[in-house]
Amino acid sequence: MRNCKGYFLLEALIALAVLTIAFGALCPLLYKLHVERYTLKQKREALEWLNNKKMDPTITLTGTLASYEWKDRCIVFVGKNKVTYRECDVKKP
Image 1 (spheres, rainbow, N blue to C red):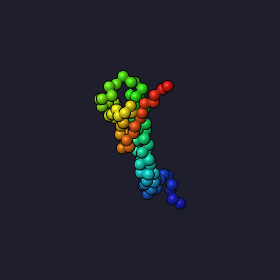
Image 2 (cartoon, rainbow, N blue to C red; image 1 turned 90 degrees about the vertical axis):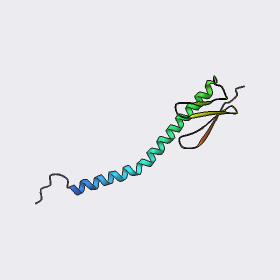
Image 3 (cartoon, helix red, strand yellow; image 1 turned 90 degrees about the horizontal axis):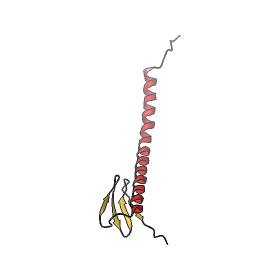
Image 4 (cartoon, rainbow, N blue to C red; image 1 turned 135 degrees about the vertical axis):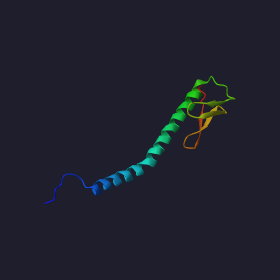
């Protein structure tokens, strides 16, 4: 009878290959999740700049996450996902 005291090298390599394939499939999804989370932080920062109202509308604002620009009572910025966003101020009655 054979002595079965552990895994064969082939079994360990197959397990490693399966884990590598699973991780490789998750990497693009995790990167997209990171980019979207960062973009939400940029939007939140733009809204904070907009609500601050102490800024000169002629300057370009450089925040911690992006550069923001005033245009017609709105803040325009390009998110990390390379989409241009426009957050506008709402006049309260």
